[in-house]
Image (spheres, rainbow, N blue to C red):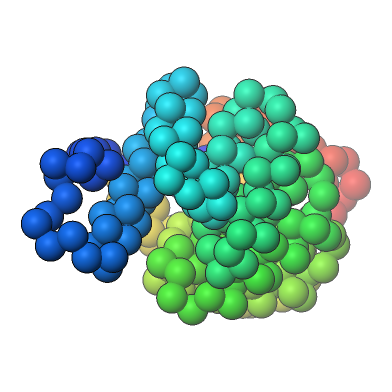
Amino acid sequence: MVKNTAVKLTALFLVLLGLLVSGCVTTTDSRFTREADRDKALENYVQLATAYIGQGNLGRARHHLDRAFELDKDYAAAHAAMGLVYSSEGEDRLAEESFKKSVSSDGGYTRGRVYYGAFLYSKSRFEEARGQFRAASENTSYKDRGGVFYNLGMTEERLGNLEPAEEAYRRAVELTRGEARTVLSLSRVLVEQEDYSAASRYYARLQTMIQKNPRLTHSAESLFTGIRLARHFQDRDQEASLVLLLKNEFPESSEFQQYKVLIANGQ
């Protein structure tokens, strides 16, 4: 299983074209050609900066973002990426300013809203994060829309809203075609609502995925979810097997502590 759900950036290594050099402009010196070259340069600068952020090379990321701002000081994608740089440096105020500039410059730039929502979530500002994720989820053409619904589900959970969390996780499962983390989260939130039959179906689906894919392994969260289901259905063998794994693999986890509390309370 994916053991943590921290937001990760995809490193996109693209060759930076020298589009700003006059010699690289095509012989057709039309306004449309110049604008197309400028847009491509902006896109490349931000993609390179994002790749460097993923590597932790913030200096190189800043360099490419500065070049982007020279072309367009209001470019939403550059402001969103700069927010990531500031956030990585612990400059929360500057990070938020950059994220807000991204959203105000182009409210339709969904990735900027996702970055901002993740930032707000990390600061436990869950209601504000929910607003950004909700807005982002409305973009039906966004390629990682399933991830947006997954983030929305986590946010609703932190706000104590289990039914909206379930709805968001269901959408995430549909859009990701059953990605492991989404299936687990949906199963877990169904257990929280005591809908054990539905939770069991999704958990069985997760188990099958783990058995078929050697890259997937149980996390403390998935084991504890299975334990709670096994206890409800009085499947002692399944419970004992999962408890042993939880104890051996994750003895310091909060889930193992929760299991001990469960036993102590006779639940």
